[in-house]
Each structure stands twice: as C-alpha cells, then as structure tokens.
Length: 431
Image (cartoon, rainbow, N blue to C red):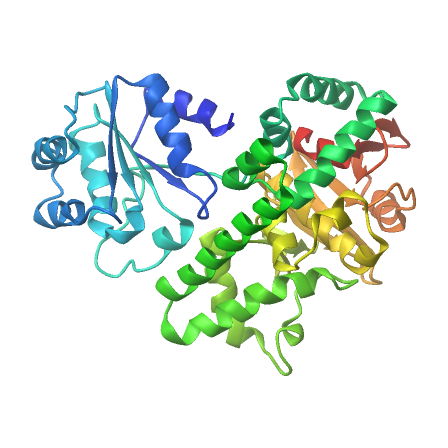
C-alpha cells in the first residue's frame, strides 16, 4: 500500500544535510513496514534490528555506542555486510534501549556516511529520559500517522477518483454526482475501517467488517498494555480512565474537554499527566482554543481550554462498539455522537497533513471547529456531519476577523460562494 512517507524518506536519503532519522508514531501506524519497503527499493541491503526481540542488540549498545565498534558487531548479528551509503541500518522499538538513541549523536558526528533510521512510538521516545541525553540537533525527526483518506482511496484502487477529487478541489467545481456519491460511500467505509494499515489491508482483502473490528480490538488491547508497560504505577488507572472517556467527551454538544466527565469532582491537576502521556504516545490528538486568531497562533492559545480526539477514527468507532452498518447507512441512533465523530475524522486528516490545529470560541458561545494556517493565511474550518448549510458561528467569525476565505466541510459537493470554500468530507485530505 502506498504511503506518503515514502516520498519524505527518498528526500531524506538524497539530502546533503541528512542526519540519522527518528520515525515516530503510535503503534500499528506502519512505521516498520514503511521503513523496510523504502529500504528494499532504495538500498542494496537493509540491516534490520528489533531491540524488543533480540537481547543481543541492547547488550551491544551497553558495551559501546561508538560507530567504529558497532558496525562490525552489527554486521555479524544481522548477517549483513553494512556498506557506507549502500546499506540502510534500522533499529526498531528503540524506546527499549536509550543508548541506541544516544548512539545517533555519534553516527551523525563520526560516521555520517552511514544511513540510520530508528523507529519507536512517541511514548517510548518521551519517557525514561533519566540516564542518557537525547541527541538534540543531531537527528532528523518525522511522525507517521494513520493512513489518510487519500491513502485509503489509493489502497482501494481508486487513483483516478483521487485525481478527479483533487482537480475539483483546485477548481472549486462540483464532482459529477455519481462520483460524489461513490466518494461519500468510501468516506463512510473509512469511518468504519480507519487508517491503520493492518485494518485497511484486511478490509481490502476480505471486505469483512467483523474481521476488521477484531483487528481493531486487538490494537486497542495493545494500547492498553502499553499504558501499563510504559507508565508509572499511579498513572496507569488515570491514563485508562482518560482514554476511555475520549468518546464521552466527543458525544457532548460542547466538545471542549471537561474533567468532570471523567469522574465526579475531577480536577486538572489529577489528570493532566495522563492526558500528556496519551498525547505523547500518539494515541490521542489535542488541540487548544485560540483566544485571538492572529499570527503567531501559538502565542494566543488558551492552555486551559482544549479538545481531545482519537488518533484513528476506526479505533474510535471500535471503542464505542459502533457497528459498520450504522456508519454505512448513517443511523439516526448515532445523532448524539455524529458531530464529534466527524470532527474527529477531520482533525485526523488535518494532522496527517501536518497542520497545527486550534479552535475558536466567542464570548457568547459561538464556535469554529478548527483554525489553521494555510499558505501563510489563517483560515477557519467549519465541519458539518451532513449537508446542513447553516453556519452561524462561521459567519460571526467571518464578520469579525475578515479572513481571506473560510472552509466549510460537509457532505455537500465542491463549490465557492460568499467567501466560503465548500469541501466534501471525503476531500478533507486536499486541504
């Protein structure tokens, strides 16, 4: 399956300023597959080391982190001749060996001719930094997210449809009705399947939503295990409580995170570490309210007001035990959750495109779902779960701040009218 990260990796390989690369991301987003496929296509050979499954690797780093010592030993362990510029060296599950992370500094300083990529979840890179220093300034870093809607469509063999969607987005012209309806059907399938590669591949192979749900349940279970494995004892229960509560937060009319929904009398001080852990792990996305939508947006964020979203919409539906049929046929029973679910979907698409997202509220409760900076312009993004054309909050924002244009995402076809660029839900990846 095509992943956009492959283009980044090729550019990294060819860069004159290349440094050892840390590829981050939540579990099961496809880090290992993407690296190995890139290595297969672009190098003579790949020396792959899984620190979790091979205890010799950690012992080797305990002995020395000097590249002159490591290279011949690693060649022996991997049964691969490691050649400068021609071999890709990969350390997987790097969070389990801090000295492997520290060694990247010396690969950069003493042996830059070796191409090194390490893979690890954000939680592993962020915690347990007590003994060894992180190689700040000595590494490149990239985050891999679940497959976005474009990658999903390509995996389903719909490259021509993707091209037509991109053309209509650029031209603000409607997609032919038959294609528009077909794309909306794929969007609803994506809600059920999500963007984790294992789930997508099983869906493509079998079209069996029950098998996909079983795969999602196993991934959710592995996330819960990580919460125990990579967390302090007194934070495990809190982290699980917060994670289980994400879907409850999204079911509220006001999706701003409310501690009281976790448990009665809950306070920020009690749960802020748990939320931070989930964000660093890549399991949860957090966006802050901006008090004033002007540059730089980061200067005006309200750190006490934020929303949380699941990092994958398929896992979100699995957590809620929402059956595929309710998503494919838009069951009215989902009305209370539908708005939050669609917001979550759009948030994932924007983050996959590496937007830093915020949201905005007025003093009287008007709310714009997302504020992004696109092509140097601050753009409001309103999200609707259907073809509802009313957007009072967006109109208030436009009247007050006079943006160059606004984006409205719904089930409506492409168009541009009264300063609003209308984008169908399936085309959020075009933004």
